[in-house]
Structure formats: structure tokens, C-alpha cells
Amino acid sequence: MSTLLRWSLRIVGAIAVLAIITMVWMSGLAKDDGGAGRPTSAAYTWSAPAAVEAGASGTSAGKTDDDPRARSLPQTPRGGPVPRADGYVMGSQGTGNILTPMPPERVTDIARKDNVHQAVAIKTCFWPGPRLRSGYYTTDPDDYGIENQIPDIGNTFSTAWFSIPAGGKIVLTGAFPHMRHWSFVTYSVDGVPRDGLNDIEIEPDAGSSNPFRPGVRRDVVPRSYTVTVVNGSPPADKTARPTNTVYTLSEPGTPTGMHMRNYIPDRSIDWTGGVGVPKAQLQTADGKLLSEQETCSATDVPHKRGKQSPITVSPKLWLALNSLPWRPADRTPANPFDVAPMQKFYNREHLMLQTFFPALPSDSLAVEKGGFWSNPVTRYGFTYLSQAFGKVYVVHGKMPSTPRTWDGSAEPMDPKVDMRYWSLCTSTAPPIGNTVDCVHDENVRPVVDARGYFSVVVSRAVDRPSNANAKCGVEWIEYGNGDGIPGGSPHFGAVINRHTLVNPSFKHSWFDVKSLHGEQQALGEYLPQVINLREKARFEALGCPVDTSKLSAMLKR
Image (cartoon, rainbow, N blue to C red; front, side):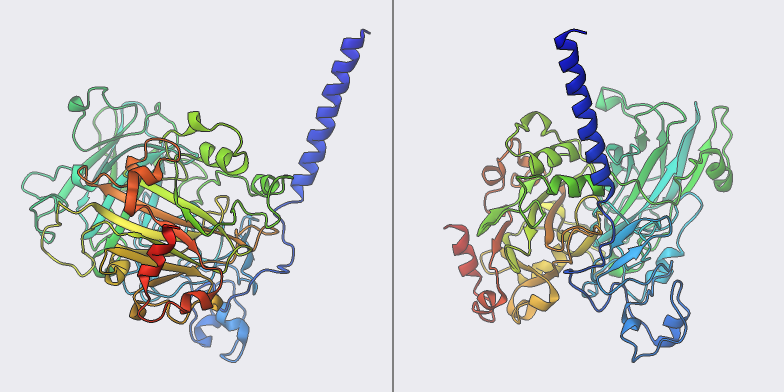
């Protein structure tokens, strides 16, 4: 045997041994560690009288109002396990998860304690009902009712899974909903957007009107539409694209996911904006139109419809990457900072490379293809946080103009606003993908200061400054209790900003960031910046009303 061959075999053997050691090591990650060192919360879902709690799914009888465990018993319509004091649960399919604390209930929320049971009842065999963060519809991380791809709790969606046979098409019929924004988007099995139609693009049926279009009253009737979903790709010539058609961008028989998104229903009447879900029928190659139940059978994707979305980043891999020798001891992707401008999100691959291997060039991966079931008419900014570096953060920047619709105004939406929707959310790590808390434009608008700047405080409830409230001129959102991964980091935090359906004339949105690190140049004053105030006393020193000019001054240092 030649020397070269012997050395080659030794190298291959060493790599194999290293791979086995790594696999064994990773197999021990993302497992319950008992919760030592993690914060606890009084509630991971809504509480209810003890008599109700005793009969809830996954609970035990005999609880009383004096029993502190009763505060954590699930009051979700789909039930689920009782969370431990630190939020740990084991899902029905064996998935471990750390649920996030329940944020304060806002009247503008799409899901509130008084409407969640009604919400989950609105479903069909094609549309399996709404999805949202943990604690609203279920506490079971393996249940369809928990969205695991960082949802915005100002909206919700239902995920239809189907495969369309050759020559067939799915016909959707319904009424335009009473809400801020609404759309249909198809996805690959791993959550990358394929094609879609948003509200303003959909032509109404003959004799009907589209209330999302300029000059059309929002209470207009009739308001019916018909949309078709077909296999393949749209024509290269956009002018030749058939109206009201959504494409799967795949061959016949390929599993396809489709979100129907619903943003800010008027007065939170229900998650569909008071019109129910659209009827779905398969038109076969020979022209036959099947009933909805027949359609569900003919387009079924086994183990997909009404099931949890696939996790697109492995929790074990996430923890392994955060344990690399050059990673911080807090096991988060955050860096210590005084002020940090938000960064643009491009796609999952770029995010992972930029997060864990920042020294490697990532320009070629900075392509706007989305991921995590993202909305094609939305772009996102984000910043990682860590409790190891600060307990109190403030997101500060100039506020773009948006419509006001929650109160149900019948007047047409103003086409001159900067964008249709704006929000700010906190979340767990991508492998868990649960949102912690959110505020959207209608929550923040009342606290915008005289210079047009918003201020949103981010902290845990225990660290919430006494002046972090609307009365003092700011909003507050819950930080959360870590990355959500059993055995993971209790320090992790993230804040996410959404810009949806931006007016082409507005040139300071996440859509306008065209190169890596070009956020400041593109967004200017509209770039949300995160200020680390570290302790609540420092924020309380800003008074009530909060002197937001001092926050603005911090951005210029």
C-alpha cells in the first residue's frame, strides 16, 4: 500500500470518527434540562375559573383558585399539555418546547380570550382553521394550531395542503373580507414562497367590487371573487398572466402549501373578517367540478393537511452552532451594543451564514427569496438581543404612515399612505419560531411623538419600567423567556420589524435595501434602531411623559 493511500485512509477515518463524535454530541442537544436558570411565568395561556380548568384538555381535576398551578392550565380550544413553571412542554408527537409567556391582551388583537373558541370553529376540510403563537389556540407544539414560523400576532392564517392532478385546477370562491390586508400564497414543503395574489390584485366577480382598491368603500356589497390555483409557472410576459390565478411552480401531484393571510380584521370580528373561508372545489381535466369534500379527498397530501408545518432549522443544529468555540458564552447570536440598527432578512441560508460565520463572504447569498413561510409583499428587519447584555431595550425610529382600519371605518383606504401594514414583534429562535409579543401600527400610532418617532420598550415583565406605557408616550412588548429550545439559552431574544405592501412612491422601506449593510442609506430616519438601556432605572429616568428626544440623541452618538 502506498504512503499516499495510507495517509488518505487515515484522513478519511479521522473525518468519519469526528463525524460520529459530532453526531453523538448533537444527539444529546435540545433535550429537557429541568429548566434550571430559566425564568418562570405565571401564565403560558389564558387563565379561567377553576371549574373550567378542571375540565380542560390535558389538565387534572381538583384544582382550585388557590392552587398556583391553576394559572398555567391550558384554556385553549384545542387543549394541550400543562406547561411547567418555566414553560416546558412535551408535544403529542414527542417534540419538546419552551412556551413563551402570555403577553398583555390588546383590544386590537386578532385573537383574544373571548374569541379563540369561535375562531378555531371556522374551518373546512380544505382550510383547517387558524394558526397563531403558542398559548392562544393550543399549548401542544405538535398541534396545527401553533404556528412555528414566527407569526405576527396582528394577523393569522390558515394553511391548505394539496396536490393538483394533471389538467386540474382548484377554484376558490368567496367574499372579500373586512380587514386591512389579505392574500393567497403558495409555498414549497420547506416554506419558501412560490407565487401569490394579494388583495388589491384580485378582480371581483361581475357586478361585485374589491374593497381593497382605491376609491372603493370598505363596506361595499356585493363583494364576491373567484380565484384559481393551477400547476406550473406563470407566463414570462406578465401582461399575459391570467387574472386571479395562483401558480404552484411545480409539476402535477407535487405537495403544495398555501397560506390565506388575514391582517387586522375590522374590530377583530373573527379571523376571516366576517366572511368565512372561501369554498374550494377541484375542476378536473375533463371539466367536472367536484364538491368540497370530494376536492379534499382528490387533492389530499398524507400527513400534511391540518398538521404542523415542518421545522426548517434543526434545534440541535442551532444549539451546536451556538456552541462553536468562537460563539459567546450566552449561546445566542447577539452581540453587545449600545445602539444597533436593524438588519434586513433575505433568506434562511444567508441568515445562518451571516449569524454563525460572519467572517465568510455572504454577498452571493443575499437574495430576496424569503423563507420561514414569509409573505412576498413583506420585507423584514431584525436584531438579536441577549439578557446577558441588557434587560431593557428600546426600538426607536421614524414611523411611516399606514391606514387606520380596525375600527371598521367604511371610508376607502388612503392610497397615499407609505405602506399597508407595519409591526414590531419579539420572538424565540428560528428552530422554534414562536412569536412572543407584537404591536402593529394602530397600537403604536397614538404614541408617536411630535417629530414622528415611535418608541417601543422591550423587556421581561419583571423588568418593565414603570413609565413604559401609552400614558407616558411609549409602547411595551414582552421580551420572552429565551430561545424556546429545551436545553437552550434563556438569554435569547429577537425583535422583528415588518413592512407590508409598500407604496412604490415611498423609498425608505426594507424593500429599498439593495445591498448588504445598506440599511441606513436606504431607510434613513425610518430605520428602526435598537437602544440597549440595560436596566429599567435608566429608562425610568426619562420621565413621564418619556423624553423621547433623549432617545433620538442616543442614535447620533
